Length: 255
Image (cartoon, rainbow, N blue to C red; front, top):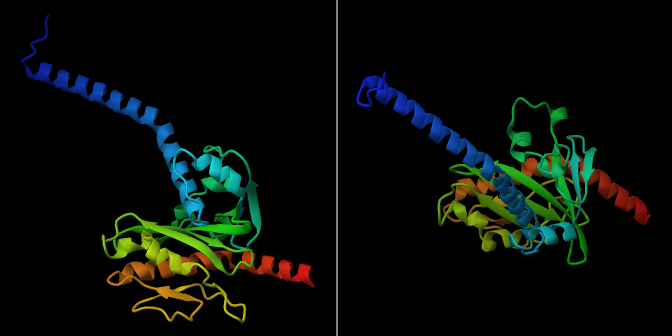
């Protein structure tokens, strides 16, 4: 018996068939695009890491530049102890590779205990210097903000910094991604003369040029500026033990 296409049953079966076909098509498209999406995310992070040390890259040359400049990828725990290291090609499926650590999850997931958290960093060579790049995440006015800060070999002086955001206000908080905001971080110091971690203050109304621990905030972007300041202080405090221990090793070598 032929099915009446104009009947309710015919309409219902047609709708089911369309859902199945469209669903299968979308699933196939998603699976087909996933490797490219993963690759795009890897390249984007590589570009940001290199930008923090002044190496400009694009999608065509980023891998060559990344592997030429990034000598080692490292994961530490909250005690400053090294958990894992990696060199060479990145395998996106290798959970132990520091590059694959989900920084947002490690800092924000309340279910993770302190001893279960992992914090990545990158040993980079640029302009003849050995540098350490620290990734970080925070919260702005309207959504997530993030950044990469490169420290010189003294684990104190900032060599470079890049910041970005998801949805901050154009012309205000979104200015954290601009060079005029990022460049003043260069040469600033995260420890005071007593060896205490003080991080960097992002000053509303402008910072004293002679202050080695402060930069100008963004006019009209106070909450985003505070978000960057909080992100820096919270993240750097996690790495403090590692910095202190390695600074002491350097001093011992000089004696």
